[in-house]
Amino acid sequence: MKTKFLTLIACLTLAVIGASLSVAQLPSKMMELDGVSMYARLDESKIHYKSHGKGDDAIVLIHGWGGNLELWNEHIAPLLKGRDRVLALSLPGHGKSDSPQTVYSMDYYARAVEAVMREAKVKRAVLVGHSMGTPIARQFYRKYPEKTLGIVIVDGSLRPFGDKKLMDGFLAGFRGPNYKEVGRQMFAGMAGPNLSPDIMTRVQTTFLNTPQHVLVSSMEGMADDSIWGADKVNVPVLAVMAKSPFWPPDTEQFYRGIAPKLDFVMWEGVGHFLQMEKPALFDDAVIAFMDKHKLMKKG
Image 1 (cartoon, rainbow, N blue to C red):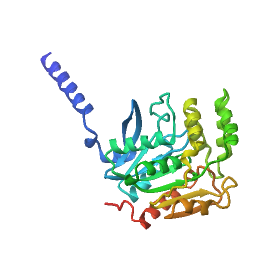
Image 2: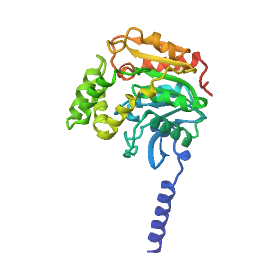
Image 3: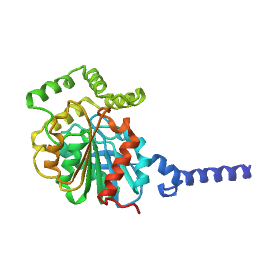
Image 4: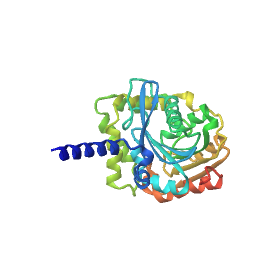
């Protein structure tokens, strides 16, 4: 009886010790595969992010409207081969982050990115912003230029999508009860020829799981004229765009007026989620851009 009791105590002790292992004690291969899942705090809300690798500087991946950090999964390992640290976050209202009743402005999102960097002890970042992630990265640069090493625009805009009448008409569909179907149709129209059905399902699922008040407020934030000023972005910028009628012929010229240190490429045969259609080409382009401008040299 005494032997059984001692055996039980030993097993319970080992279980407690195993459960209390710090992240630093986990196998490095497991950490590299899944990242370290963490939460930062902004005001009274939690922001979910994953940290991969180590270092004071990092590539910070910012998803677009209705997305979350999981949409960057395929890019983590290739980018880590090029640099030492990658952070991916789910913006407030998205993924596993809290969804408070607040104004989801580009400024609010920029503060969220900074909160994640601060909690992760990242001093400077190359911000990779897809779609809505582009005005967020630009607003981050306005607020925290000393923390911005460079910006990668992924089919994102540096000017308004349309006038107030057009934006109001666009938003009307997302304010109504059928907003989910409106979103499904919109994303289907954005798909390129190489976007697999599985990836489209992932994109649509993240959208469907995003609360309506977050979607509407975020879109209103992108319609705010105050975020589209002519102020310069003086760090290196890479713009990877999808060739489509959506982008006016003067897009490159306009972007160069905002970002003097601009590398600009426009890919044919891809849609809005170009980084998911051609992930290897995209990751190589990001690393080549960072090598060219000597951003975050690999340690």
